[in-house]
Image 1 (cartoon, rainbow, N blue to C red):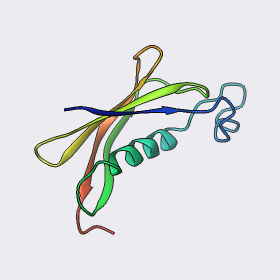
Image 2 (image 1 turned 90 degrees about the vertical axis):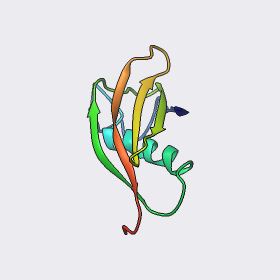
Image 3 (image 1 turned 45 degrees about the horizontal axis):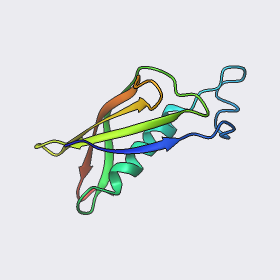
Length: 103
């Protein structure tokens, strides 16, 4: 079962100013951080969330809202995707995992 969380990036988000001038986008690292934060709030147990794979399909612009969706798999993997709320366009997708005993 998919779980989801909406994230709105402010039109004047500070990371967009330098990434890139005249064509600002939200950095992929920030988008992945939002995924990790959302999943961490629902992951069971102690451990570290590790990104196994991530692919970016479309830039996210300042002022856009992204729907972060994730689903826990049987083998411990967690599938995620980030879709633009306004158009349902896929911005990013991949897999992460909760690894126990990792620092």
